[in-house]
Structure formats: C-alpha cells, structure tokens
Image (cartoon, rainbow, N blue to C red):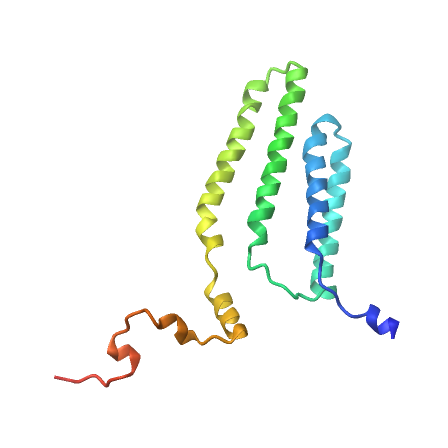
Length: 168
C-alpha cells in the first residue's frame, strides 16, 4: 500500500522551487562581478534545473492548477529586480576600482528599467485579461451558462432567433 501511495503523481510546489531558482539567479548576477568563479556554478545549476524541471513537468507531476499566465509577470519582475541589483553591485565595484567605464555602466540600470517599463506596459493588457478559452473552461466548470453574460447586452432580433426576418 505504501508503494502505491509513493507512486501517485503529485503537483509541483512552485512556492518552494521558484524562490530557490530566483535566489541562485540573484547570487549569480550579484557575485559574478566580484567572484567570476561563481558564474559557472550558477550556470550549471540553471542548466541542470532546466533539464530536470522539463522532465519532471512532462513525466512526473500532475497539473492540478493552471496559473493562466499569472505567474510570469511576478517572475519577470523578480528577474529584472535581480538584474538591477547585480548591475548596481557592478557599478559599486567599478567605483571602488576607479574604472574608466563607470559613466557607461551608470546607464545600465536605467536602460534595464526602461526595458522593464516598456515590456510591462506592452503586455499589461494581455496579462490583465483572461483568454477566451480559459474563461469558457472556467464557465463550464462552475456551471454558469454562457447566456448569463448576455443579459445586459443588446442583440438584434435576427441574432437572437426570436423572430424570423421579414423580406420586403
């Protein structure tokens, strides 16, 4: 009986696994400038995690929830935040070393923020609205009829099917 219970597919714990990957990403961004030996280990962790997660999500885990794309804006914000923190640490290191490239490096966080703002502005409407197929699936699952949405909307009589069109 325990063997059968152990073989039952489970759902992935995104609240546990995603922060670990983002922490390694932040460490990679931040400390790759100071200690370049950290970068290969972070790259190895990310590549191995990618291969393992693809296998786990395809063959092991059962999809019990659908985030409907709601997880991506959250993750994208954190990744850009990690990138800006890493760039700020790069600027601090270059200031301490009195580098000649510091004027160009000061533009990196500003350009990254402009990219982030432009990307979120461009895709905000997409993330704020629910796709029609998922809305229909939720509608069927909750037992509501599609006609409930039409109560306050005008439909011409021809489209309603109440009357037959009269030919003059």
